[in-house]
Image 1 (spheres, one colour):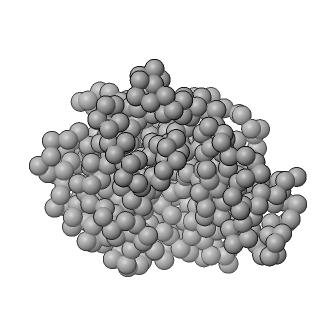
Image 2 (cartoon, rainbow, N blue to C red):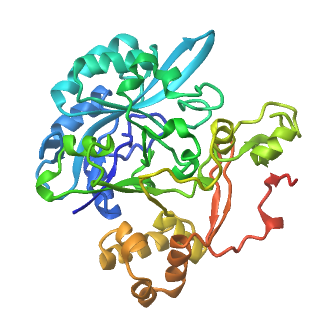
Image 3 (cartoon, rainbow, N blue to C red):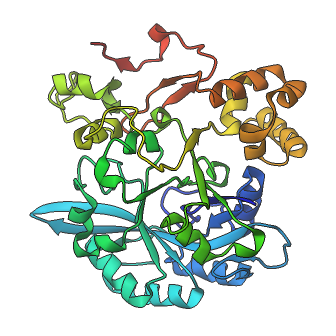
Length: 418
């Protein structure tokens, strides 16, 4: 049985997230995508936790389902916390994802973390503690609590970020690094980029969507294979920890250039630069003279000790995908939130069952029977025959599926050439 999982999501109580997010809405969104296991997100927030307790009931060990709905969706108790601390005289800010096996343990987690910051202020609370202290406290509550760095490469809040990160997991988590088994690659990087850094070989790269609204669920995900009877919180964790390598099959990835921190840049000046170009300007914006936001690709280059294209032995494979509403918006030349695109999406879901079934598994000939442009777009995405205009400094990039956009007509963005 294929199990697609997205562990990192948010509730409506997290900053800059849609106010329409509900537990039932998450369940429906997961089913539309083809996701079997989804995080609850934000269990540290007291109001959201109350909704979790009211809306969910136990299913398999450590997993939950919506009360009164006989759907296949399973929830795992999850949250994201921001640890802010001083290290060597520098301010460090690391976002961490946390998975828990039971509501009783969640209550203990919240009781412990409430001493370090307000849990009700944000679904993604800011805690005045080091990343290592977080892991130590959580591991003392239960060894079954699973912690991994969120969006590891983002400039300000990633464990390896250019502005507040570290050069290794051991530096960031100190003696607690032994309890870190995985990291989230984030939208602006993919496994291929991370394989260039040999010190990451011992950690499993995870891909999650980190969505701020329900339609963004599943823009990245993890693919497992389990017998129905074996699905549980512990079996998922064992697969992530690579205790049994049969079960973790692949990850589903954004094209990393579409992520909003892939290239270096300065959005106020419409400046987008490759790492090589940014080095020529010593990391400063050539228009205003201020510091550039150093992107993920640049940061990977700094830590890489392997050439591009290196694949470690036993590496978990991956595929690139583009969210279906983006594909439909592209081929119809209509906004992704328009009624036309939404109705088209719903019709496709009725025929193909789920988004991932269409984008990853359906025969191109079958898609062609519905729409030839859609079939061509899906074929191009699967074979990576697309062009990507990289995102930078908080602006998402663009996947130019049919290569429509001419180099000289990339909007107002100034992409300085060598």
